[in-house]
Amino acid sequence: MFQTLEQCRRNFSKAWKKARKLFQALEKWRLFFSQALEKTAGSLSKVWNMDAQLHRPKLTLATKVTIVRIMGVPVFIALLVYYLIGLQRGEDIWLERVLALAVFAAVALTDALDGYLARSRNEVTDLGKMLDPIADKALLLSGLILLTRPAIPALAPHIPIWFTTLVISRDVVLILGAALVHALAGSVTVQPRVSGKLATFFQMATIIWVLIGGAEKQFNWFVGTAAVLTAISWIQYVVDGARQLAHVQHGPQQK
Image (cartoon, rainbow, N blue to C red; front, side, top):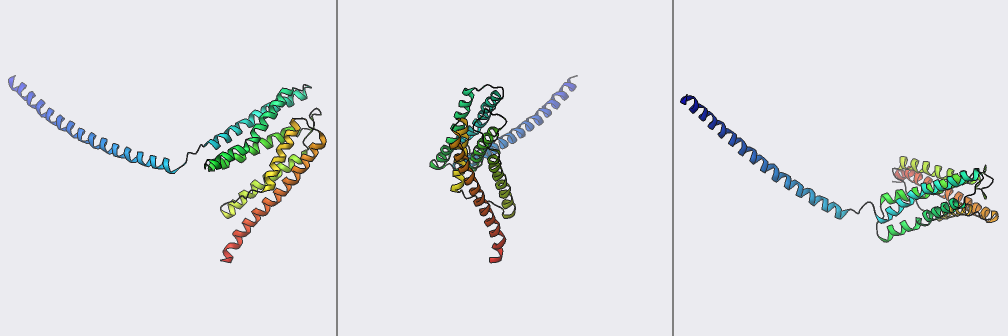
């Protein structure tokens, strides 16, 4: 019996020594990985801080203003749709029309604000360049399409169908042209034109004139001016795109 107990004690002692060695080895590995993780975390922290110093924040104040402008577009659409539905029922709810006008004017006028903030704060970003025209086109096209409704006699003045078709056709052609130039040339350089900016201004002025129910004579002048400027800017942008394509095709031959 005593021999059995002694044998058990020896076996336990050997097992304990092996377990202690195992625990010591595990502790060494734990310390090794802990130190390695600390070094890695320190390196990542330095890289993160360096990246934060070298790169500007993507969501700048100007970009936030642009996002708010985009969020105002569905509000304008909802107010105008409710107003037009009321007209179809013979109900002229002026509050909805005035609110739609206020939202449209706010989104349109703040177009210059986000651009000024981006330039003055030196925060011009690719995200802002992409979102700003989206806000403008979404606002303009939604207003033009909804107010081109000759089936509602109570809505006066009406935006003529040919004018809305002209504006949409120009934008579609320019988008397809830009895609073509990018595919063939690898990049697209869009040179802002005064005619394009003036066309956008008079397009917005036309929509505002409809929303306030202005006189027909002045409305025709707004539509005519906007149409002429839209056509001029269309031609200029097409010529710019053709020049870029010609430069790509004839560039290698000149070298």
